[in-house]
Image (cartoon, rainbow over all chains, first blue to last red):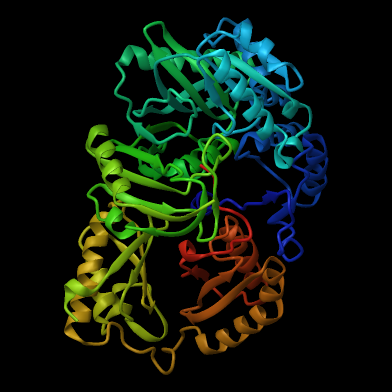
Length: 401
Length: 204
């Protein structure tokens, strides 16, 4: 919203549930059947006959597919629907990437009805069990032995049969088992223009993500990886995007890097999640040489509308975000120490997004962080230290289950 | 009360906007908005905030124990916020009114905020609040200053993940249609205190 305002772009916000203002602002609010991209595209086509649409942007995994369908229906810039679909489905994605020679972990897809003991007997160890569709590492569990495989399988089965998950149909009746890839994890934020990937930022994830669950914590940029390793990661992400058939718009890729080079873990046809994009600031140099600040969202909107985007560079300062770990299962009553956390030098924002009374659910069943910390400084090391210092000052008061 | 006993919590909204919650009330007579250093003349707190070097402050809103600062520069909020905190403490320690009361009559040529207030209040009563009530929400009209409307959200709107959509695509659009003289809408809600938002905030 803020990015569109800064650009002076009229915005229509689509949601799957009607806004209470939909009738009052029919050009600015639209209700779409986001569960069925083809239907959503038909709805958007009808809408655009009355209110012309010049660009479309998805904001998460599901709406990236809807955005592709709408772009195709309206003839505006976007990805092919099949490509967006392939990026959303972890099995389809891995199948295409492996066929194209992009380094991915060995994988196999199974049905929930299969006997976990039989699967455990032939699984590679260590391995990771994953849902095909869920995001934010919900339901992702590492298993090191046949016994832990069976436990993980049963736990993931329970998650996939929860009503909100089961509602997505066939993908919720299957799971992925893949080899665990050791090594540091990195997140690449990029923009595809005519099939060419521009790397906008590369994040390091300094906390080891070795499981058994994969709740994220800190993202830091610029990366401290050597230049050739960064180039290898960017090349790997480019090959992945090409293999999936993605050609336009934002890309968020998760990769591991070890002695054998980069490994593509996941690539999504969307920008980094809403709050985390606050860790990114860019400088755009206009054709006249004038420089101006821009957010990631502004860059995405400019691209979607075909606006000029000549030279984009990330700001010079190091930056980072910490997704605050869920402190435990229970009902959040209070968060103490927010003022003290904000007072930590280099910390720019302490955003507590969980509200009092909210039920906190730890990973792997959960997928919602209770808040976010942001910091900027001269070096990634200083930003890392500031985020950890701020986190130590927070105290979550919860009523345990 | 000594400056050390005053507690101030900064809540950046984005790089341009930050709210400061103060443990002491700064201005009891509704909200006051200052859109320039000239307008701040005679209001010590606003004067001091506009004078912060390098911040390029564009707007200061003072309401109760809340100060909202809008800046144009990319200076980090921790740096600017420290100066804002010093200004708040200095004003409270001096025991003087932080901001002057609203002028009784608008200067010639300026929008008649009192008349606008009545029309905006009518839109809130008859259009806005019946709509947000369907999601358990409520929007309070705090003040109208220089044709800018200040609102506070409550109930299902407070802390809602769609609050900004409601504000920009709903309330602002509706005011644009019914009261086109309105120049903008400013949300002075403490969204972190919302305990029953209709839609949860972003996951990640």
